Image (cartoon, rainbow, N blue to C red; front, side, top):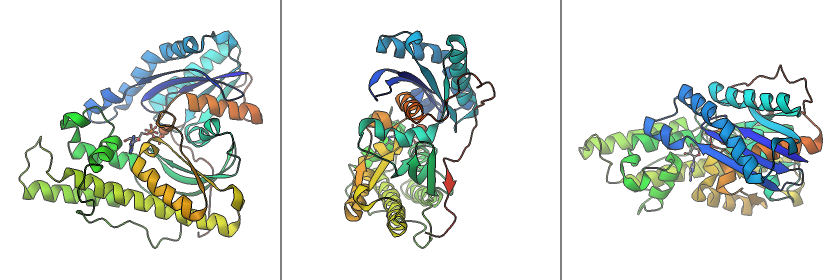
Length: 367
Ligand code: ATP
Ligand code: FE
């Protein structure tokens, strides 16, 4: 069978076509990244308009790329939650329209479930239950994936997401004014600048929440400390409105280091809890890391050290599959098709997009 997946939750219009064996047949992606970068952030109505303008072409390109017509598709999977309402609405409407017009089953998809499950498409040895860390522009969560549609949330960010902090700080640091960084996402710009630092310890940051008996995350404090260092430097060195501070590489490295230390610390706590409660068989311990921030090599190297210490295998999808794309939505459709859960033959009129939705049940006890 062949599943077509549609993604429009944020600023990427994506379509992927995957068969039920997990073979990628075709794909297409239209990214609004540069447009939003030039606007200094996503303007939701504009994102929605661009999805509306591009969705049909993206789906047609993916079908062309797969060398099939829509008739050959067995079901349409579409991200319906969580995300920007005006963006989600376009994909949801279009997915349902295709299903009606061509009499196909509709498979509504949770965007974070898709980020979590993509790893199983590239590494078929990953079985449930596995530990998953999702770090992106809108989320930071640590969960045990127990089944396709069952997640136990060990922790999540109580404030900002790490990608959001990188994006905001990169903008505030004016990294875009340096030609080298002009087209990069904030996270990538911070990573590249950090790789050129000569002293990642120049700026003082303390990892937050070190005494909290849970696995939650917090990035707002880190963002404020970073801003404080930046403002101090700008004042001391009399930096002009379009200029970048001289110590920018070191500031980026100090920021990346504290984010990495925090992520590693919370994930290790989660692993210790998993071991105490025997939630994952000791010989099958896998940590999947995904979401746009998982593209960061420094962060994944930090996580690798934790995984080695705790006897976990670390799996990270390729960067293309870590950031938003239609392939992961099609694959999530395949997972649901194979498990026979959440497939709507024709009674899908009532399914609406939702801007927020928890991925699963949260843990209530102390960790
Ligand atoms: P969500 O999945 O939570 O809805 P999203 O869809 O906006 O959020 P993704 O496309 O998964 O997020 O990820 C985008 C984020 O990833 C951006 O914040 C971007 O800065 C960040 N990012 C991309 N590359 C890197 C990198 N190399 N290092 C750190 N962050 C990165
Ligand atoms: Fe995403």
